[in-house]
Length: 330
Image 1 (cartoon, rainbow, N blue to C red):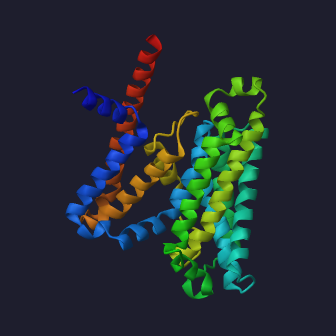
Image 2: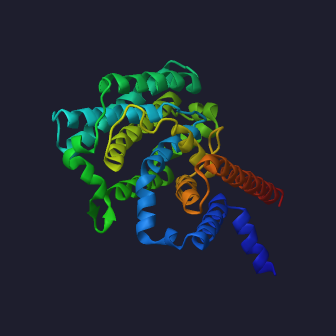
């Protein structure tokens, strides 16, 4: 009995464990309705199609850990993606590696400008990123000049999303590498500790010698860099570049973080939680059509599932806080 209580305590005392249980339950339920869901091809396709959201979730993790927010990321993605698309359409640049570097560089520049306005200009993140959301989306339309790039304009670049390394799809491999790098950085480096310190208590972090504005600037630059990378990936995955690409998907990125237990007030969250949160969101997006839910009702069902998972996270966090208080009393 004590062992059972101990196991239950560990489960309810860990956000990641509770998310993993939700993930398993979702997969089991969906598999009953659609046996093809758990095949390797189905899982690979799901990860590939949701890779851009999963990668940007990492950047948003850093932003939310500081108590900030960035709603300009989908527009940054569109700006960098349209740049790649137009360069290919008019045969200006055809080298895939160079195109990725251009997209990443543009994204980093966009994130840097956002970071400067927020960190150095002291503008509220929601206000600053709302403005840049319109600016970067407008730039995407300006670069397109009423044009868009279709699959036939992309040449060999579109095949990048079909290629494999060691049997793993290129897009999925990049996504997994991003998570491994972020896990190492956030868990075992000074940079990661600084982000958590600033997010937990900005004043205390400043007193301890951390340049809080530089940390904030770095986080928004990284967010923009990942959005730029995802712009190029999105062009390859969807075989097109349009100014309205991934419009409104910044909400999915934020939702993935919240599902993963990342606090909107800062200082709390993990790379593992962000991964599980984005994976749950990807499974929901993949599963709803498979189980026969009408497209009109899909957003409603998706919202209900997200709400249930978030409530579970809140309950888990309260149990964790209660257990921590008991430990202090002892």
